[in-house]
Length: 176
Ligand SMILES: *[C@@H]1O[C@H](CO)[C@@H](O)[C@H](O)[C@H]1NC(C)=O
Image 1 (tube, helix red, strand yellow):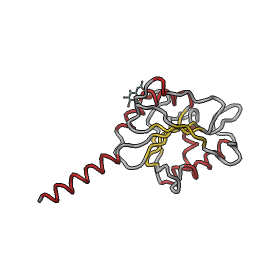
Image 2 (cartoon, rainbow, N blue to C red):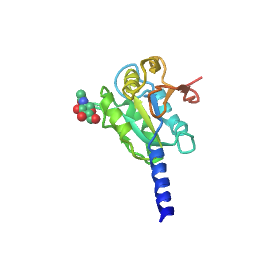
Image 3 (cartoon, rainbow, N blue to C red):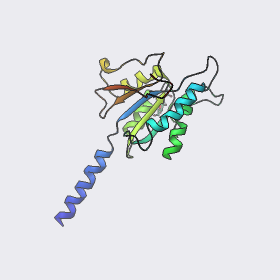
Image 4 (tube, rainbow, N blue to C red):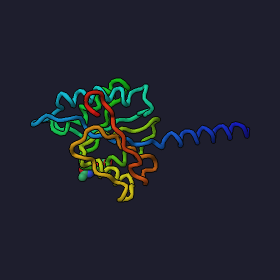
């Protein structure tokens, strides 16, 4: 009997360990000079993200979130940016949280029971609010530069350390 108890405990430990996802935060791709949607460069970035975060990468993405978009096509850039990647990974894009509702994002992240890590694609100003809401100390919450589209923020479980590293997507032809 005892061996089964031990095995059950080991199984429980691995389930708990799996539910400690790292959160990766990115901005949507480049935008046109006016109107909704992505520019040609933005679409190129969306394609590039298939290799950056795809199955053969080390990111192990198990859940993808993008801000809720509107019927008129506004706020849809984050969704458009991650859709090709999501299709590759066979994942839905969770658009249940409004751009300005960081506490909704927190609920999804902290309630996540699946395997793998979480990729969040959002409007750049609101990324700081999400990191803040997840529990970061104020001085570990960077601002996403308005002239950049390529930076990946890493916010590891349990999120109180905030953004611990920033790296470029290094998309060929877009990022130097
Ligand atoms: C934010 O999202 C939560 C769901 O997590 C919802 O209950 C709440 O009403 C939302 N707040 C606003 C202001 O929309």
